[in-house]
Length: 207
Length: 207
Image (cartoon, rainbow over all chains, first blue to last red; front, side, top):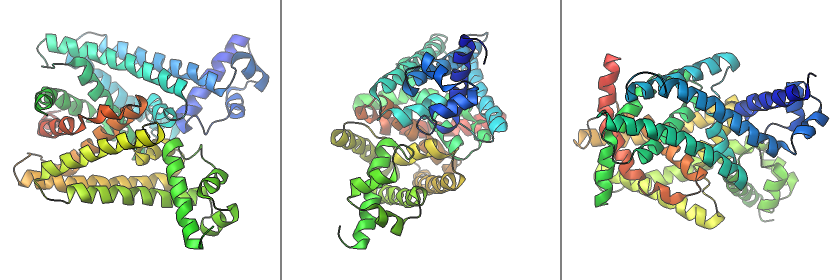
């Protein structure tokens, strides 16, 4: 069973895998314990409830995503080249995921956002906060791209929101089609969207 | 309890409401029967299982959406004006939904696509089919817009896929934010995306 700290980590990892694949409601505490190889008593030593656990699972999803963001967006290169690297990394991860478990599991944060936003206000706020971090990190690179003359965005924060929406929507369809290769053109599609966005602002001022 | 045909209709309506608000896994047969005011025995007279019922629920979601598509896309006006009418109608429906139940419930088909695509191959195929109808209906109006010179799309079917992705992503975020007003600019954002899409094809041929 290992040290108590191992058990907590194993529970988080097992829950992360199961919830990513099948959702929060479909996965029970007993199954998480079985998958982790940890006794149910230990579960309640570390977590008050499945809901308590999922708050930490969301943090661990975000940590994984934040690492990926820093590896791709924080590296060398012009801002849009780094953004493209981030998008290609996501498409590649979808392919690896499908090869590993036989399904495109999609974005674990987007899955939980659709599943839980109407059901649990605390979890909705938590997910909203994490999407806020993600959007702000993308907004920062869009701001850089605008300052470097690669884009002409009036409102990088808002453009980042549209970017997140488009990526989540494309990931949703790749999960529905169980086809990670459909994300191969994600990067050029996103860049086209970003180049079009100043037109949106212009239209809105006349709307 | 009404005639048997009423009971079937009541079960479908109740399941449609409950599943749209909370998802497939979270809603049980007993709750659907209670909500419908129908005895559990009647449920199994009409449906073999909850899974059998949800196939008909998906059809009823699609029928509702197809009616909305015909009312907006099928009416008078130039193709892009009709598309804009469809998008504005969706944003307005999100507002009415939030006012009625206190939450943005999002797109019931998108919700089920994310919840069920990894879990049930028959349901995934059913949802995929319905998304295919939706995408093709949008592709037809994009084809019309291209022929009328309003857009310059090389591949209207593919552009319609991007349109569906963007709308689903924006609806996901409006559900996460519980903010239907965030969809107020959906129509101009989508039109900007569509105007940018020829650039995608050009980039892809050189990728």
